[in-house]
Image (tube, rainbow, N blue to C red):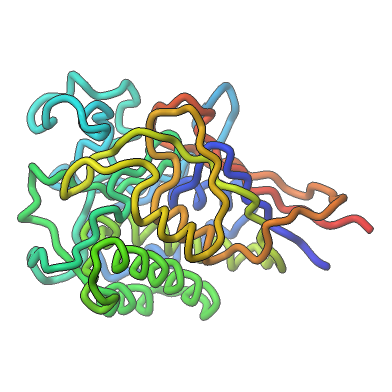
Amino acid sequence: MGSVLWLECSSGISGDMCAAALLDAGADEQAVRRALESLPVEGFEVRITRVVKSGLDVCDFDVVLDAEHENHDHDMEYLHGAGREPGHSHEGAQAHAHEGARANEGVGDQAHAHPQGCSCEGDHAHPREGAGAPAHLHPHEGAQAHEHRGMAEIAALIDAADMTPHAREIAREVFAIIAEAEAQAHGVPVGEVHFHEVGAVDSIADVVAVAAALDSLHVEEVVVTELAEGRGTVRCQHGVIPVPVPAVVNIAAAHGLVLRVLDVRGELVTPTGAAVAAAVRTTDKLPERFAVKRVGMGAGKRAYETPGILRALVIEPVE
């Protein structure tokens, strides 16, 4: 057997955490940037930097959107169902500056139709610290400015990206898994699911980046043993919902993902993170003996009581 990728999710998983961890583990940054720059969307830039998490030097993957689409994703009180809506003041926000401020940029031509089946979990509240990626639009501000798109629109965006067929297949599979979970959560056919939060450009960018990065690593197997999750509630577009959110629960049930709930208030596993794990996992068992070839660590963005790091280890089984 050749190289194996182990996604070690002891602080949860989300799209941007995974993109960062894979890049840190040696994925081709140019392939990732090429795919992202070829997406037919505007109003965002990607920053790949180093940050300190729990005293460790780790990679941070951040899709930065313009001010119009700020979504106050860093206001933890609001996200957990307490406190005011953060429309004009940031006093209640956690002190992680821009880290949690990734917004919910719309991509596409149609103004919000808000049809039946609109995704409410999507990456609505990416644990920008525990699980890291954003894409949350709060129901109060700017909702009318954001768009809803179905799988056909998202598939067209993915198809337009400059990436390999295998990377494109990964990206499509991730969104198909989310669409199925959302359809089940909302009681509608998959064809009627329209993505609001997940369809935002930052989440599309996360998925495209993960797909291009993973493809460039050329691993033969992907190990995901378990996903650490938090507890409590989180706010999505349609109200306050329990953690794990319905989409994550549905993905875990459909794809046999093992969850381990920590005594942490917050959402550590996002729907995009769960869908990535489900789409790329080939086994839930590590080799009995292995050599570690490369280690990548990706930063989350929210301040939860976890290290906020996703590790991606490239390993080789030892006979």
